[in-house]
Length: 147
Ligand code: ZN
Image (spheres, rainbow, N blue to C red):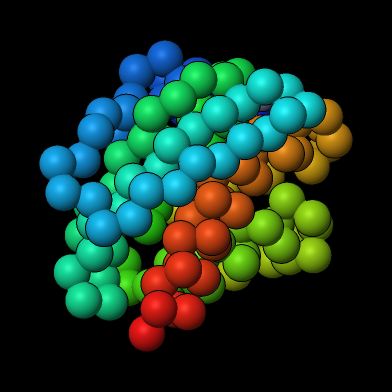
């Protein structure tokens, strides 16, 4: 049997060391800071919308490998999706981390982000993994309260 957790770790390492999503957006509609004082992770998430669709995202900042990789993988996962789809993906990710959803089929919509499934075994790392997702939730809330 293949050791899937090793594969997932490679993916996380790859995204944390080199991410195409770590850059500045030229014309961002939203810019939100995320901070995890437990670990010292700090990210700035930028989002460009096209109507209800998430056209582009980027991040900058610093922190541990988990927080950086989670941000980068979240961007890959929700880019091109509608706000509604992104909301559902974010909720599924958070439920996966809290172990409220374990059904593999349901988790498939997370694509690569499923790599963080085993983070729930490492309580000290959970906030690192969730940082970007909560930051994106804040942005969606800002958008929804503005319309
Ligand atoms: Zn961290």
